[in-house]
Image (cartoon, rainbow, N blue to C red; front, top):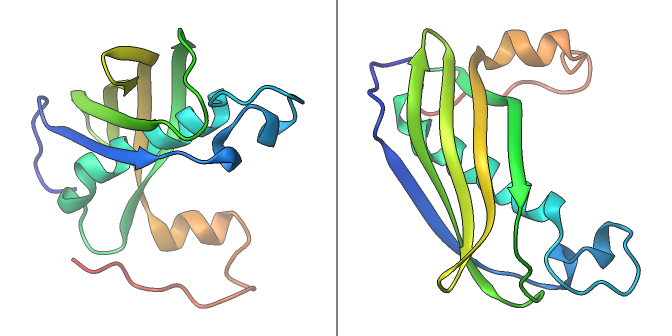
Length: 138
């Protein structure tokens, strides 16, 4: 990984849909945003925050998560996912993360990622026999 310092921030907005609702994840009749969807949003924000710092054939994978889902928002809300890099320890990256709707924090916490050699990682997961690995653009 190229040198990166804590303080880096990335955010993006997403127009949510019913597929992001708690109902879509099995909680029948609950049409607010589901925790699994919000976790996916913060994982995306954290990965995008540091993506430009990967060396060729590197990627990052989630290795830790501590979040609280503290407020509801309806499926269909426009939400913002944010990640701020707070710790760099060799190949481990720590982030403060949150998802907000308007002025309301929906989910808040921390997320850890590890920088991996993508080819080795996928080989360990058994993907080598399934398909060729696409090279990351550096």
